Length: 189
Image 1 (tube, rainbow, N blue to C red):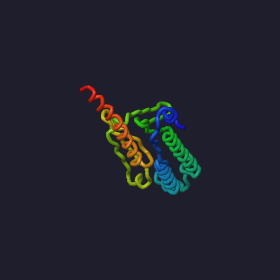
Image 2: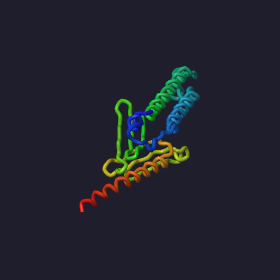
Image 3: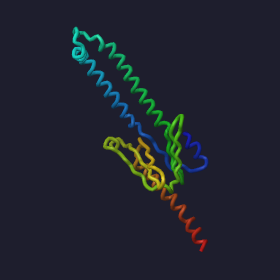
Image 4: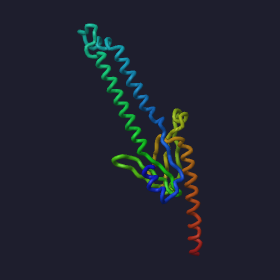
């Protein structure tokens, strides 16, 4: 059980939880393919590149050797793995739950971001997905409230479904507040 769930599950009913998509790692796959492709092209054309840059080129590369390219591949692979680990940690440290009357978001390791919005303050939710995200079933939502800047959350699994659940719970929360307000107004007259 994660931090928000531990905090709120004993006192409030959790209505919905968000899940984050592993397809968000396509960026790291693209970076790996791009770096690997660049290194492969440099490796294949190492002699031509050194010949174009060095007027005293003898035909055998001195700087762009297979040993240099092996270490370059190791470095590029390590870089991509580091990016993927940081991205995975970032996704793991994000948590979103919806209780009967609140939207709760938590993110971060060293310095954290905690957002608690009463559901009655949420006006609408904008769901954004590009063609690839639509095909793979993930995207981002932008939560619009009255006073604050829009709050954006990326890499959600089925964002339109999660947005519908939030708005449904917003309607339930607003409906439970309205009767109390009408009674209070009626008792003053």
